Image 1 (cartoon, rainbow, N blue to C red):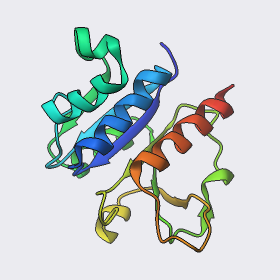
Image 2 (image 1 turned 120 degrees about the vertical axis):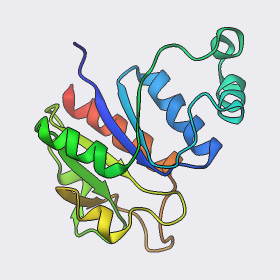
Image 3 (image 1 turned 180 degrees about the vertical axis):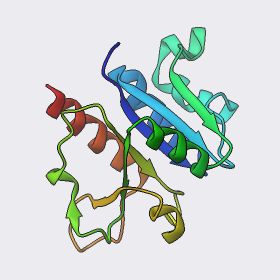
Image 4 (image 1 turned 90 degrees about the vertical axis):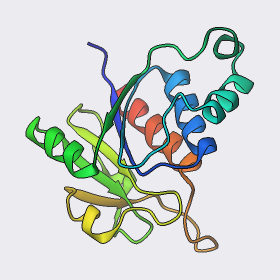
Length: 161
């Protein structure tokens, strides 16, 4: 089995963000996507329209099979993955530990992302094993999913070699 990078998205509602996530998954072929809560589906017409505007193959044939799983709640997803020995890592601009301090050379972790507008709630962050920040200038308060997800995925690919 190919080494996959697990990405968990809670209450993802923006078609453009989900389309960008799918673009990274298609470009790398290395993403296992978990979508929880009241999230938009990957086959929503707005998502497919945006991904199709970037890919002739998707325009003509639809999305290829991607590793996507839907969960009723983030708690259900977290509980199942923790039982499998998966370490759950969230991102927050307020976390003390830098993302670049993580060892991503193994396969025993998943990254968890909250809503586009407010990130992970404190209660949901407490379900996770660890929170990290993506270092950034103090000129901005946060980065969007369409920026953070490629950073996380490509750094994990780099570390896995």
